[in-house]
Length: 102
Image (cartoon, rainbow, N blue to C red; front, top):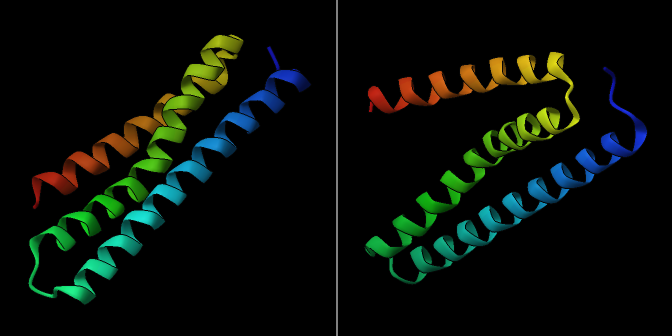
């Protein structure tokens, strides 16, 4: 089954909103953390806010893949479900490997 125009447009709108929201939230956290760091260079709160901004920035593409899986299942496009699940598997393995070497 192929994606019809309305389903494809809906998916693009959802993913666009997700990416804009994620990048905006990350930018706000990073800017706030930077300002906090400049005000109090030895403060732990600044480091936590900066780390939160980086986590949000890194999580945004992963969330995009997760939303894509859900939407492709909803559209019953099984080729893209399988492909997107493979991408999600690689991303998950990469994150788990990075966390295990921490």
